[in-house]
Image 1 (cartoon, rainbow, N blue to C red):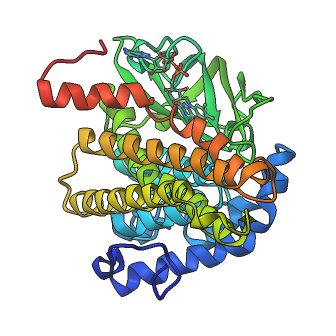
Image 2: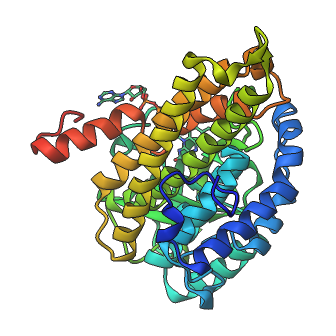
Length: 390
Ligand code: FAD
């Protein structure tokens, strides 16, 4: 731990501004007060704490990079990353709620919406008065979203939306859904669907073993009349949803490190306290190896996401660079969670420690926002020029 109490083996704090550190500290304090003491119980009971949405709004967790005139934080991408890291140190499900709201709902409305749409939706989403969700994945189209079959048909005065989306974070509690559907020409368009529109329902998905404190559902559209002013006017094609995913994946690259750091810190502490054969288990070489590998991987990944953040600030980060960081951070976080689980012995499977919850959460994080395999193939395509996944 550095002087400020953060795991920081390479003085990466030396690369942060005072503002970055203040933001990180304020989110850390928030997580310690509002999330960490309760999240184990929420997860055990598969309870989504709806009141957290307003609280996230108050602390500035929604849309940190959106300009302040629309209620956002007007911050840079390093700040955004640090916010995601500190929330996910608490829980990946909580971070998912914030990622979806900021990167997948507010970002497309800000980036591709009309001025009226920005003014109508962004301040309420930023404050947490409204919760939003992002509908891209369908029952038959996950890794291949371009194959989607949800459609919007131009009826003259309005559009008619038909189809279904699956695995949608926040959906059962959301007032607003940014949904991607094919128009009459087969072009992918974004539409803003609002709670209460006739024919629109959001059934909840139960029995998850992962992200249990986050709520997940479907989006079902049966002849939903969408007013023309609810289409995102400034985007068409798959690059619309993919650019949103770039923003969310960037946040996950930082966020997963929060879960990794939490597991590492818990394992280090436990290994120094727990004695077997008359000594702390931290004195055994095999346990030291696990801990040393953990801090090495965390440090490498911290440098990677910091550099990626600087590139994002300059508008230079590529999608492939973001894929690499998302994949790496989640992979090392999962590995660290598994090793930390072993260091905690039998205690590691209980809710006394955050380890097993992080591990189970990360099994979703490694799959959503592009699977582990697909991100590897994106790197493969980038370096060879040959796409192996189509
Ligand atoms: P598939 O695409 O069926 O993949 C199954 C396996 O096949 C994977 O291992 C994959 O890597 C592999 N595979 C597929 N194609 C290839 C290929 N060409 N080459 C090699 N391997 C391949 N979606 C949203 O739109 N909004 C959300 O808010 C959202 N939240 C989610 C929350 C949770 C908890 C979960 C679990 C998912 C969420 N998703 C969301 C959906 C998520 O993005 C998809 O699950 C993901 O894209 C994978 O799709 P799939 O589950 O259909 O798996």
